Length: 236
Image (tube, rainbow, N blue to C red; front, side, top):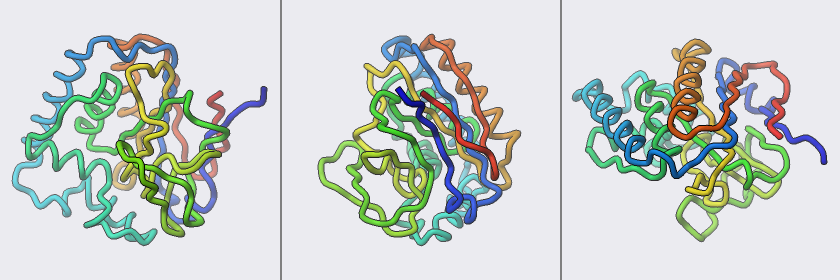
């Protein structure tokens, strides 16, 4: 069996040369453990994030504004396509955050604590190599919780594998096919940074997430930080 890799393609680095992509590979976890505790951590993080936000205009917040600018850079309207961190902070402010499953709750906890986008995919559902790239346009994509296709536009930043798009508009909407479930045992988790957030901030967030996963869900974790010019990351 051949190896599989996570690859950040030049078309992405050309547009975002200062971006930092953090990856946590978690294996052998139990995503049915400590559900109540993980949900509590999420609620606490949401309450704290809402307090830190105060009444500041969301679009101008330092954790949100760089992502709005990034979305404009690849042609997405940020008022329509909101980054995952903006969506999460808006939910925290309105008190509408709810637990999903322990692993998702943990990465959302870290996202709120660090105010960085976090996401995750079930490694067992990924086919072939995993790419962070820009869309040709029309690639297969069915959003989380839906059945109808919503393909990306040309030039849009996407995560994809051999079967299609895994996440559209960089971190806006994940695919239903690779979602984390109670049965997930191996996961690809990512944390993304744009200036002013850099390597230090992304690495700290990855370490936070990896520690929470090991503590509450068991298993083993390995963390990687990718920057411009780094080679492919082997994940299987």
